Image 1 (cartoon, rainbow, N blue to C red):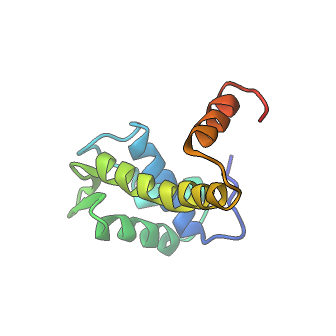
Image 2 (cartoon, rainbow, N blue to C red):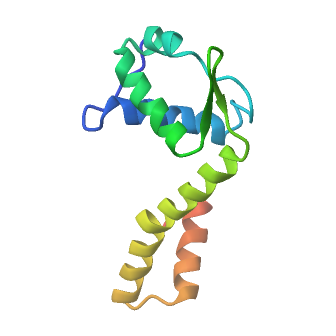
Length: 125
């Protein structure tokens, strides 16, 4: 079954992110070979260049590396590099805007922590 893609974002980025997810969650380990471009083309039913564009970005970022004639492999330290990148994105996308809004409406640090804990436990604020 072909995976569904979000029409609002480039497919090569979504494939790249799926590979990143597999590295972050441990499905792909350091120095482990990733699926070949041909296998990914067949699986995703997309153009070879679409797969190559996403993989080349991962190479450029130092997440995967090429072994000529053999394939692509997960680079050493890739998981930690991706985790750090995602922590920074999480802070920029969610935490900073949340804290800015909390400040605007006069919530204290304790109140913010209480709201988070309440939501985490399944309660209502």
